[in-house]
Amino acid sequence: MSEQKPEKPRKHRADVRGLSRRSFLTTAGTAGVIAALDGRDLMAQSPSADPPPVDDRVGTEPVTLRVNGKEHRLRIDPRTTLLDCLRETMALTGTKKGCDHGQCGACTVHVNGRRVNSCLSLALMHDGEEITTIEGLGTPDALHPMQAAFVEHDGYQCGYCTSGQIMSAVALLKEPCGPDDTAVKELMSGNICRCGAYPNIVAAIQHVRRTA
Amino acid sequence: MHMFEFIRPADAATAVATAAQAKTAQQGADIRYVAGGTTLIDLMKLNVETPARLIDINRLPLNTIEVTPDGGLKIGATVRNADLASHPVVQRDYAVLSQALLAGASAQLRNMATTAGNVLQRTRCMYFRDTAMPCNKREPGTGCPAITGNNRRLAILGTSEYCIATHPSDMCVAMAALEATIHVQGPRGSRAVPFGKFHLLPGNTPQRETVLEPGDLITHITLPKPVGRSKQAYLKLRDRASYEFALASAAVVITIAGGNVTRARIALGGVGTKPWRSHEAEAALVGRLANPANFRKAAEAALRDAKPQSENAFKIELAKRCLAHALQMAIRA
Image (cartoon, rainbow over all chains, first blue to last red; front, side, top):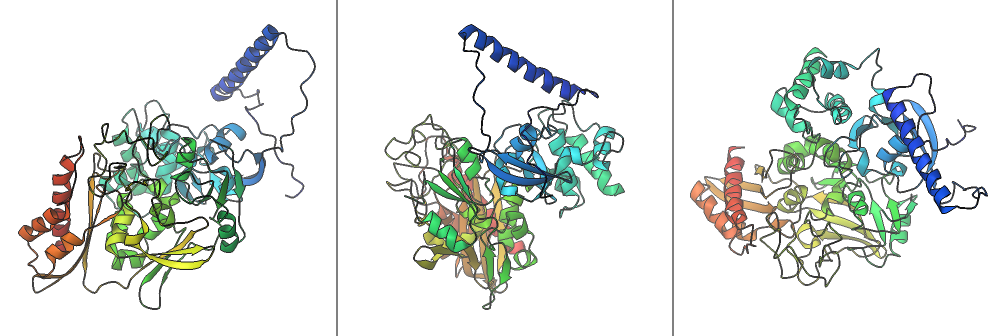
């Protein structure tokens, strides 16, 4: 572990073989930004000399996060929230940024097995801790029972809140919660669904609770 | 968000010595402790708080709940709200506290937010949270636009012409009724502050919210030995059924013997500029029959000094009904 080098912060996935919709969009988006920057440089007729090398240690702090069972040794700006670290530095974009102020629940992940709003936490506060995101829950071939139940019960429309809903729902299975729908609704109130898929979300969760 | 230095102190003494270099421990502090982060990180994103140094106290040994030798309860500063709410002793002997905690925030936030952080929770007043607006609490001397502006959710008790911001906590309302004590470690030693003396009224210095001075670290909170056969309830009224701040709330701890109230501890939330202990309601209850008419009289006493703003006069009647109903809930508990 000690000889493992800190990872370079990554902006997008480099893997182009199995180009998913997500990786295509992030790659195309980055290419667009680069093209725009190049155009601006040309218009400003800036000197062609290469910019001086940037020391990425300046203003950054080391942190080790165990995400979905894999250890990541990173250097990050101290201001980086856990959410931005997962999405921007580690390219785990399954966790969503909704309000960025702890009011919507789209950013819900597990820290040491407990659900939290990753937008209101600094990544540095989680040095050495175990993080689980939606990417670590199941795979397309082997869905987590909660993911399968959300599909079966149609627990979403646009899907933006879904990863947060599922992370919350999985954590709820281990929390004190009464048997009825009212108790589930209360414990899921930190996850807002703008499409209003609430009845189906509750049905999916209750299905898993009954069959688990 | 402004840049800051992130500090992980080895122990509480180092944390206190570092934080003691701050110019203030109040609004705009240049050094802040961070635990759950649910208030502070939010306000740092809004540039309402701009500390140059953040001291992470999460690794300090302040996260235990223990029964004290005198039969009370000692709650560590970084005990998470969810863990405190589900602790068997809290559920059995301090039910009002468990109920208040579970009425607050969401399951995710309760997993993050801490006991000490909840005590230091900041107001949700929209003018305080918006740096484009004047605010006497955020920038002393700039004025209070809430008084002539959007004040539906703001306070009716303990206000001043400088500030009408509501204290948003549920936990603190229960702590006030339970007569908790806040234990502080500072650069000149440790001290114990009764809960009712910890938060300050806004007066003409709304930027000063507590008695904390630079370096002061809340290490734990103690609850006195539970009062035998006391009946407890927390009732919270709000715009949504869940995940919303109180418009009015009431914490009730009463003892009844022979149909009469022999002891009462009452606190209100959502209506005060600090967690609002109502000695007036308590005096109106003790020695009288525990019945709806006397509960209403106690509620009238609690709100006698209420001062409504342009949009929140409804809170006076709402708070009265909230307290009267909470008393009914308690005697049935």
